Image (cartoon, rainbow, N blue to C red; front, side, top):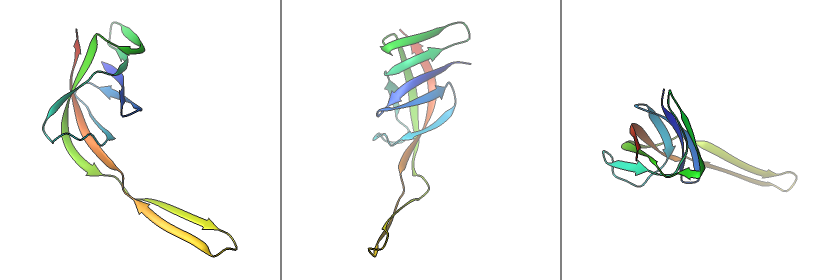
Length: 105
């Protein structure tokens, strides 16, 4: 099974061919195809490639499927014996992507 480890917005993700993945929000319209060129590692059935730090001869074509929000994360701060309590919540934004193909130059 082909897979690659890529850098998207400073975070590393393991992407498989023809599979879905959730990544931090990418500001591109739904249905568009983009190319990821920050590939750190690529593995196929026959061989593996390790970048220093990136691989220049491999790019990944992905399709943006959906933009969505994750589950709410509660942030609660308290200082004891001071009467200080703050409760906030945040819902992180994600993008659902599908890997179309790995392209070797």
